Length: 242
Image (cartoon, rainbow, N blue to C red; front, side, top):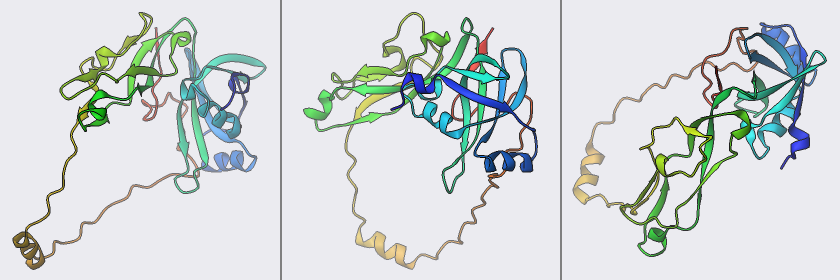
């Protein structure tokens, strides 16, 4: 696990924006393209070291880590809000970085971790089902929790843990619906063997026409980057609250 000292700074250099060839040259030099935006400033195309980015993503606080972004002999607080991996080789391709103000609230997602062995598993033969694995919260950057832990040892059939049951301080506001289920005990579903009649009917049925699956084009060389603020990220969302 990376230490705080290793992940508290990310060095960036300005780069030529916008083209696949420019992105390719950045990667040939051992860097990856990135976009920096937020804090009321124009977006900037930069190049960063993928090893430094991976250390941040693999740290204890992951993509919610706040670090110093070093650019043009200046440092600003920043976070990683989105990232892309090449689907075949798994190499990091691109990251989006958000400048943040420590006195402005952010919207972030944090993981929910279940602690303890559920009573319904030990004594009733049930299965613990973890339904919702992360929740969206709003808080100041300094108050972002690494995760939210909830004790499920009391869970039995008919008892549930919902968002409103999660422990948190008054510095954190849940944006996820408070009635969303986090975890509950469910029963084991037994598979029913098909009857001989069903097997015979299936054997004589006319085979269906094969379904044609269309695959979308994947970009691996360039990102089709724009200098405008990206749309809401799919992996992680960070918004500045004015």
